[in-house]
Length: 371
Image (cartoon, rainbow, N blue to C red; front, side):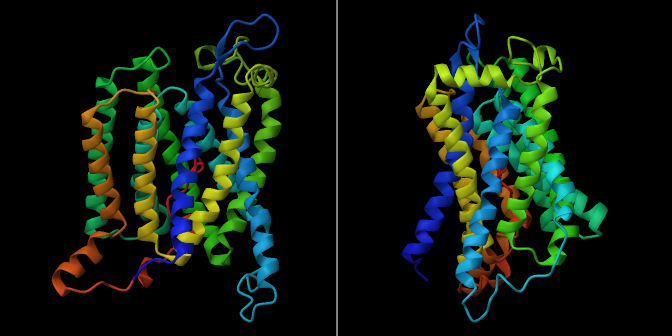
């Protein structure tokens, strides 16, 4: 069945905004500008401030939700009105996990390439699968265990490609190793977030946009308040500020004032995460979860291609193998092999009703899913 123009638009919107989300954050990291006073020129290394912007983008999903609810108010089904009552505090624990994981990922993005960052985020299925067994009592199918093992192999290959790759002055080998490990650590925290969402949020049948927006509200408020003490906490080598603190908001403001393109990159990050979440919900609803997974994989290819074209990283053939292995692991875990086998054995396309799934059960993009 051919896609409609609206479905093509949604697929394109998800692919473009998802790619912009990571690329805009990396673009901001690459600017080297003087800060306040007589401070020397230095990179725009403000991951926690960027994370606040990301949560502002998620928070805007609440506005989209209420707009859609107003439009649906006069419809016969009232699908957005017939939801269970729930306490917004239900979203606080997963929001705290999202805040921690996203902040760590933004720190990691300053240390490694955009393509490796995106590929290593695929490790989330490993920990989500293991935690769903341990905490939700689920039983994984043999193909899902095989998908987890395949994903682990893909991560090893991508990590090896990072070690063999020639990095520029902004990406020292020690930083790349640290960044890769931080990405894996962040995915563990994001996996806990997903388990919490499934255990406490799904049973209340909360609309995905409302869930994302409410988590964004909590993340934005809490992390914005934490920026104040971060301006005084020494961070040593992890700090990108001339003052050596964990975060330096005045320094970031001065750098943005000296280089307005940084503001454009930050605005691209904020707006793209909002549109990406909306497109992700709509693609899952209008098409299927499998289509969303494929588009997310294409996003990785787009980020890699743009990074190579802009000279942000050098080509490494081993990275192609790592990406293909990660793609195979993700496909096995999400059951993509079943419709393919069904098509081959029965000679007909299977129905895609079983492919439908909720946004929060799919891959998140806090730099998105990320982010």
